[in-house]
Length: 89
Image (cartoon, rainbow, N blue to C red):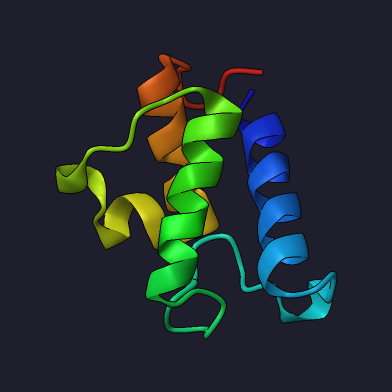
């Protein structure tokens, strides 16, 4: 499941923010903000994507860099919100 979630997140980020340029995609644990991939508006769009795609609710208190700052963090966050154990396939 982790690979599926990470793939969906990577596809969305590549399409929505990098216009398909996978060469600009940071490593999974690199900050999307520091890499210039996301800005404050992008974070809001990302939250909407998470809520729609994974049918979760992102609370204001959860909008922290540990949850939304990298693809790895996003993957862990979605897994925790959907009840998926880390490493599960």
